[in-house]
Structures are given as structure tokens and as C-alpha cells.
Amino acid sequence: MGRPHRRGLLPSRLVRAPRRPHRHARPQPARAPLTRSRRRDALARLEALTGREREVLVEVGLGHSNTEIAARLHMSEATVKSHISHLFDKLAVTNRAQVAIAAYRAGLVD
Image (cartoon, rainbow, N blue to C red; front, side, top):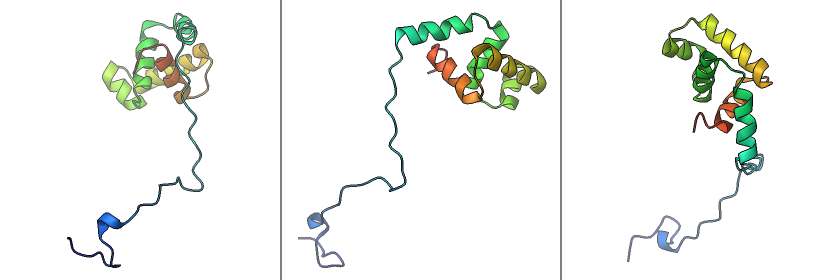
């Protein structure tokens, strides 16, 4: 037999209560599967992009900052910002997260 726990019970006899999420935690919605039509729509939007904009799109999709993108693609940070602005217009999005989602849906990033 083992050594008693401080309350007199052996650890093997203790029963763990089921873990409950914090009372303020919101349940996470299930991810919608990436259907062929969603991927086709995402790829159609990418046809309007230049090659350099597509490269910036991939980098944003990977979560890199403007400074990191500029260093990786050998361009100025102002040029990166310009490309990202064009991405917002051409993809009809309003923030970087939506740009990253577009890259994911198009299959450019995992």
C-alpha cells in the first residue's frame, strides 16, 4: 500500500471531478469544411492578383509581420503595405485575418 494523502486518502482513491470550461469561456464553433466551391471561389479571387501580391498573400497567410515580409521578399516595408492595401481591395476584405483566411481557402497555406 502507498503512503496516505494529506487528507487520509490514497491518491488512487481520489476521484477527479470532470473539467468544466471557465464560466466566461465561449464555446468554439466547429470549423466549416472547405468545400470545392469555396476553394474555387477563393481561387477565382486570386486571378486578379499580380505575382508579387500573391507572394505577399502567402506571407500574410503564414502570419508574418510587414517587417518580416519585407525582409523575406527583399522589398521595402512601404511596398509591402501597398501590396497589402491592394489585397484588401482585390479580395474585398477589411483586415489581415481575412487575408490569411483567403490564403488558406485558396490552398496557398496550411
